[in-house]
Image 1 (cartoon, helix red, strand yellow):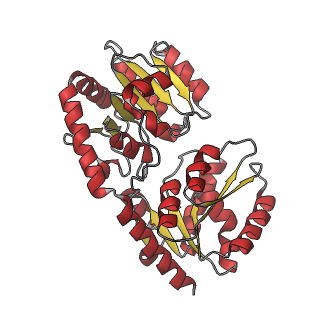
Image 2: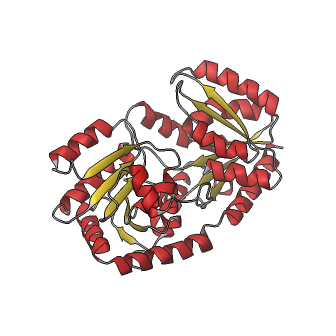
Image 3: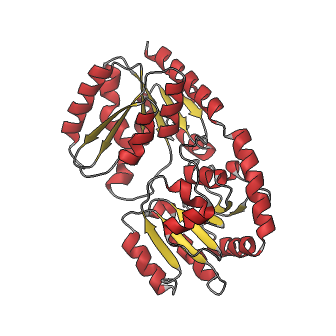
Length: 351
């Protein structure tokens, strides 16, 4: 989403800098490279997880150099740490809430504080209707904007055969794919539970992504008797280009905004079976463009998996219909128009 927004705004003649803070040792080059190639200025800063004072000082110095009109923050850390520094320098702050992690402990506390401080931003963007409804408790209506994510392609999908070879998957046979961070909110454990319910059917599954839950998920796959049928591919840059390897793309999140992975799957022409969380039902309709089931209903989703794999013509028809809707309702130009209007409104409020 940040890549598409930054690249699109540069092509419209705006001066854009993406400032990415990250933990030491993280490789952000696959994220930065497409933006740099398109003319976006990119600035990476490495800090330890709790090096708050050092990060605030460095980012404030960057703000002095950049002299931007708008700072667009994504996530609670940049909002909580850097909103004040931007506003003290006369910059308007636009905050986008993509969803919540549903993680307890400090991350959950930070998200709770974040939501209650969003009223201090000149504008707040919610990427799905449920998020918008939730934020109305904390943000005034005139400052809150619903802007669903758009599809801004960066890389073209690989052909099916090439994608399968890259992932080490068999050339033939049905493959069910899952892409995302291996964290509880994304529901990779629910994906494994769903697969277990159709274990008597022929299929291979592939999980693309990494995260703190990987070891537990590998153990779960073994316990469920799926160990030799589920491939954990790890984190792969630009994973969306590999989705054509799958006959069916599964989204089993417990919570979502408007998931980019879903848009990537549709753009790749792959059929979708998903829980109807967050903005998912506004992207694809059950029966017309995908298989959509109640959140957390693994038995119902397993039936959808089985039906989709057994009916290739239906699978192709729904995938094609979803592609048409993606082009019609999630185009990048109207999305960029909305952001430009929000930025201008935020600047006027700051002045």
